[in-house]
Length: 483
Image (cartoon, rainbow, N blue to C red):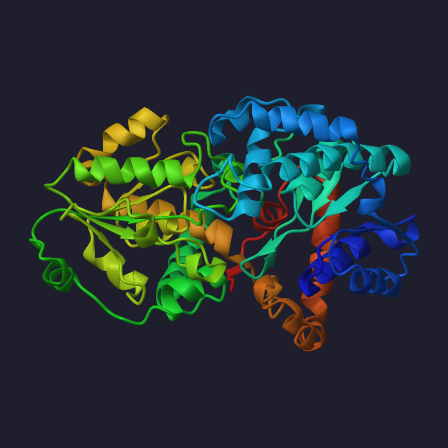
């Protein structure tokens, strides 16, 4: 249901590892690029091709139920109090609606809101109907977000059908195995503290060294993921603390904190958001608390991909106006230069939490996220604790050397890879169909790493480990930098 060259490449690796071509494969088409995707399935030898749309039943009953749901809403957060078919989590419905609206907050007066609810209800029913009809022994998906993908994954887990998400990021395969009882918001594989339980100190130090090298390269602008490109390559203007003070008329000796915003609608609850309704709720509260602390100067930074998504900017939102100690970071300022100039970073759970910590800059996150277990950030346990912390000198609490070492260890585990990976590092998926031109040369140059990748995937699937990259790293003692 999603067409991307690297998706097909990652699926082919899983297919080879598990011998899926020897079974009965069913190819599922979504709403877009049906002709092209069907062609790809046929080239794989998949002959049983079905359309998700054929399972949809948009009945009067569905429309009536959706209308009643919408009629009962007074504000966006009321969506969390609704019950959806098969117990599908309301937070994921909220995120899917938010993604469709592409606004700073979910608008319950949006002209298409009822249509979105109809789509949700009908899609969940269709997902369960499809699984009832096909009864697969394995579901392979590109994503677990949205109504279609998330609905299929959720309904499969309810039916005790194992699921593999053939995700990829930062140049590497990051497959996730979902089994009954596992949370839907395991978006991608990432390290957990328990992964280090039996790791000797010598190996930890090697991982710290590689993590440090990777973070230094990333901060210098050599990483190739889209977030790093927009943060470090496309933001050339250097700046320092004195120049920031001159620009905004601030005392350079006063505390200087940078607030790093997120993409408004980029699946926050699928990433673990619990303390706030959405990023608009969070940034509004942060701005209000910053206004009440005039002794601190606050830089607010739009997410680097906001321009790529064409989302509303903080300046357009207008929540920072009228306070002399609140200013917006100019779009061309280099992020490494900003991090060198400030006392602390506030983020929800963005990648900047790792980047800043790797430089020894204290970080306060708003919630538990995907790196909170490693202890290099201050991670409040509630909304109130986070807002209370904002009014303190929290950045003075951190041992900068310790947070650097902890961030480097996480970076080594997450961004780096076994040295057998060799040349087999994938460019970012966002290059989309241009990747078809580069894949043949990559395959030709990477025969041995590909064979090893297939062997590792086979061993991972047979193991109890849910996260493929973690599994690979646990089996290796020699490493290299990722993309």
